[in-house]
Image 1 (cartoon, rainbow, N blue to C red):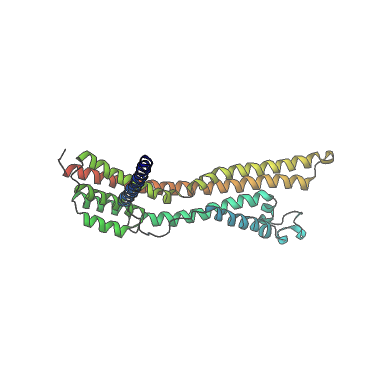
Image 2: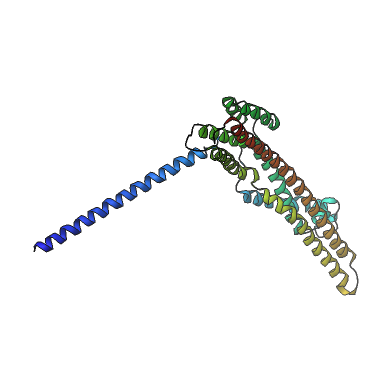
Length: 311
């Protein structure tokens, strides 16, 4: 009986010890997660609200533009007043009627054209907000001068005045500069690496805002030409069908097929032309911003390197 009682007591102590160990592990895990979250917040401070950030759900623009494109094709270009005798199947009386004869592909090309125009305005306002409220070249020169003279309060004031993605990235780098400057546990090389890392991380956080919807514009560059080719082939098929019908050529059907082919070719090329201009214009804007950020980031790291001599 005594042995059984001792065994039961031993098992109860073991169970109690395991509970204590489990509770201890849980406590350590919570503390570790809290510490990691605190470090993450310090390394990547919350971005300030700096205006329009772009439209994430670009498919909404595509749907609206599709409705608008086919509405323009059917109700505006297909208006009976644009055809001789008021018959859509007849000969067009003006340019709008001729474009309507391009078929349903015209509506698709108009969808792409309207989409790239809307995305162009969307990118314009988003990149304008990201660029900040000051002139980029002027801000870059002033903040570099302030950093080289170690006037960090002045540099922060410029960032708060600038706002946008540029201001956020530079402010994060300056904050890290001041953080590592008071850290005596790190060597000089490690501190410079942390400043550079903070700058790169802040830049990567801002890049989605800058590059948002640019892949869609790039896709439309190719789709415009391919859709034009598709419409051209359909038009030529109609023309050859007219030639083969009854062994003779129906001049009305033949001209309609050629008209469809040429209209689709012209409208598709126009869409690709607009998309190419929009894409290259805003890609250049984004490159200028990233080059300016890289220049400032290098200046911050170089300033720390030149002003501190410890190993």
